[in-house]
Image (cartoon, rainbow, N blue to C red; front, side):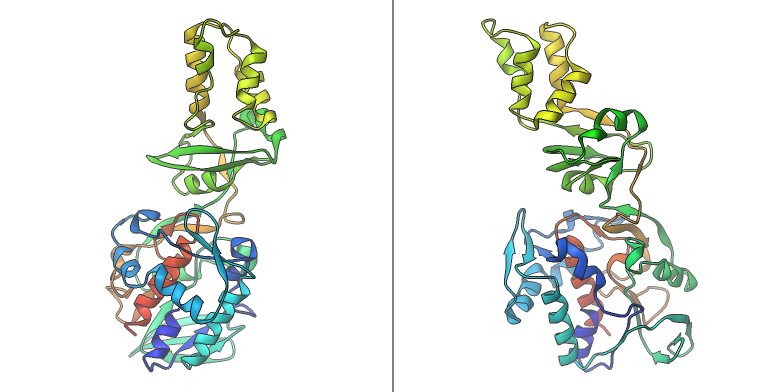
Length: 371
């Protein structure tokens, strides 16, 4: 996106790609269908040490702008849920669109280009194993540490440090959580069971699906909240949002017994999860207080994960180049003229659902329009 915008303005642009093909992360995103943006994208959908930093770029390159590009290339797409837009066919459509726009803008693309050194004299010198590139401006769009099997490295952070820029310590975002040993023994044989929940942590909450895995919890609600979780923090899960499990038992005519409670709970949760919950938490008496305590517990299942599944399973990397180091309008370094950082390598992390792609497009456009 950055190269396209710069190329359209008549700049000579080279894209240096370490891999043997472009856009690997685009191709695996959204189950191969590329959740390329979100209709409801706003600054509140991003996590950053400076929550205001992304406002300028996001306002100047919006989801509507990217949709216009998609429609220009006649790519069929659909809204899945919550404003998430996906390709009808394949993520290859989006990659092909970007490659086509690069060609039209006169952008040169160099694959299999392993960068060995970056230096600065009157401009920037980038030395690769078989070539040397010189330019007055250098844009770092290396992504974060997530999914190392497709080539993720710390190169962008290392380069920022080389030029004296501060880094906010990275951590895995949008990642499954690993339960502690006791909770694993209680729940992880229910692998594959999912339910709509509200997951909360650090003042944030998300209402979406939760999935039990063989090591812990995943699904959209858990991935969302994982970006806000830090070691030893608790995550609170409302297993039956907006529902009252024990309301029917307040009628004195209604029998208060385990089979009636199980039937009630099975109406709200998957059967196996309802049965397991009662195995572990069935009331020891049928007093109003006991029923109240059960109700409270099911709306506030409190877990303390032991860890996350790490960068191998994380969809994004939170943290990164400190936004205090960059111009919010242009993404240019305040200390090093001509040096820009865009996308995931910056300390701006989107929620699940197309927001991280929109940040990539918006921050790329911001830099490309200034080169």
